[in-house]
Image (cartoon, rainbow, N blue to C red; front, side, top):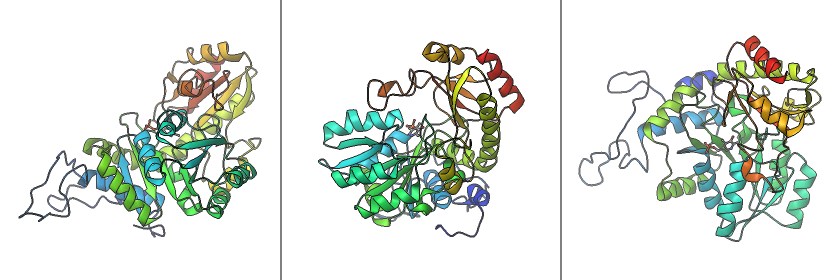
Length: 384
Ligand SMILES: *Cc1c(COP(=O)(O)O)cnc(C)c1O
C-alpha cells in the first residue's frame, strides 16, 4: 500500500496487512511460529515463503502495516530499534563514509556510531539538526553519506524541520534518515516530508505496552529497500513472529493512545511550567519552545514525552525520580504506564563526557494513559 491510500490512519492501523486468515477466517493474523516451509517440489514455494529469517507471514503483516502507516515502498521489522539502525548504517554507508548525527541524539544511536561503527570505518560529526544553517555548513565543509535526524529528540525534545533538512541533505547528495520513535506515524510522517528512511524503535509507542522489543525501517526508495532486505536476511536480526504479533496488536490502538498521551502530556507540561521547583520545561507543545512553530507545521500533536530541569540541580532531579508513586522509575517510554527517569544517569549514561552529554538536572517523563488528575497529583507530591 502506498502513500496516497484513501483509508484513514486508524483504519490502516487496524486492517493494513491484516486480511482475515484465508484458511480459517481468523480476524487477527496468526502467529506463524515456524522456521521453515514445505516446498511443493524443489523451489515450489507456497506464497514465497522458504525460511523465516528471509520472510515470515506474521512479520510480513507487521511490515505491510508499517508501510501503510508511514507511506513508503517497503518496511523491514527487526529484533530491536538498534538492530534496525545498525542494518541501515551498514547498508547505506561503507567504511570511509561520513555521517552527521544530532548533537542530542538518542544515547544508543551515539554509542552504536561512536563505539561500533567508527572502528568499522564510519566517521561522524554531531550537529544541532534543529539548526538548518549548521547542517548546511557541516555538509559544505565535508560531504556526508547521510544526515541522521531525530525529531522530537530524546531526551531534550528539540525539533528539526524535516522538509528543510531533506532539501539540504538532497542538495549535497546525502540521504535523510529520521528516527520517528517519539512522534510515531500518527503524529508525523517523515517520508511525506521528503525523508528517505524512517527508523523506529517499535518498542516504544508502536508496541505501546512495554511488553515487546522491536525496531523497523520504512524506506521510500525501492532500490535501497531491496539492499536493506538483502542485508537483513544476510545478517539476521529479524523480529520474531510473536514479537511481530504483539507489535501489530499494539499498533491497532496507536491513534487513540497517542491522542490521550498528547492530551495528558500537555496538562503535565502546563502544571510543571507553573511549579516553583521547576526551572525549565521542555515540551514542543509549549508556545515558548524554540521548535514550537516547526512542530505545529509538521506534527499532528506534540507527543507524550515531557522533560524538565529542576531548580535543585542533579541531586534533586535524582531524588524526584525516587519519590513518585504512579510514575515508575525506569528506562524506555511510550507504554500505557507512566515512567520517570534521570537521563544523565540512565538512558543517556553512554553519552556522558561526550559532546552529547545531557544536563544533570534533567528529568524525563513518559506520560502514560492513567487518569491524568492522578498523574498531576503524583508529580506535585514528588516535586514537594
Ligand atoms: C529506544 C530508542 C531507540 C532504540 O530502540 P531499541 O528498541 O531500544 O533498540 C532508538 N531511538 C530512539 C529515539 C529510542 O527512544
